[in-house]
Length: 292
Image 1: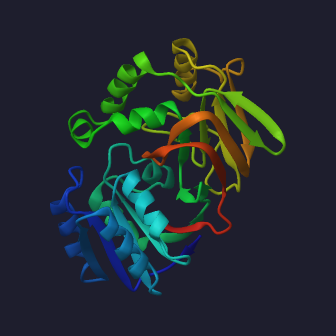
Image 2: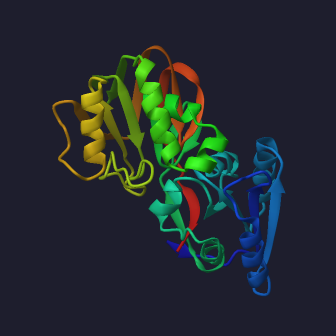
């Protein structure tokens, strides 16, 4: 970890974000304006966020910061220049990435970290060509995430996912998954490949996962049922031992996931179109992030 005073800070924020307090963000930036060159860039679309991130992060001395949830961070991560520097202002529903990296959830404190923090190299995973920082999920959680609209998250917060999960479970038919790692094969009906401990809120499906150990952590549920899912959730909450009779946990650097039919997947909470084959590995170059 190294220190770096950025020459210019650009905070990219979705102009239509419901969870971002623009008044608090503006006030925090104004307080620091006397000490550093800082600017809020309000983006009107994902395409604009991508183009602005690519352009600004390619300039040496710039720090580009994502103000938003894990999905916003993922968008900027994938647009970041190869040697770009990324900052975080957690302002979403779960804020998994920010919590894992120790970024304050209070906006004024998070903005201060952009100026006083240090550069840390964070392992970055790639799934079918797209980068992610904390988790890839195949099957059920992607179905649930895809059914949760913005207004539900605004009103219910994390509970929106719990409600959607219960409703989706009623008619859900899980895929059959085959996961290959280091010449070994694992089979199941639901899988996560994690780069960080947290999954969402205070759930820890892969509590041994670390973003700086050069490994990814597979958790695969052998059979999908109410009982098996509840047992795995109970473990993730820290209330029981890992249920090794219904699930497996494996570490590796390269995974192939094959599904018996097109299956949706999510990366850092962002849902992508269904596919039948997924290749997951660690990027050769870690991401440079500003942390406390």
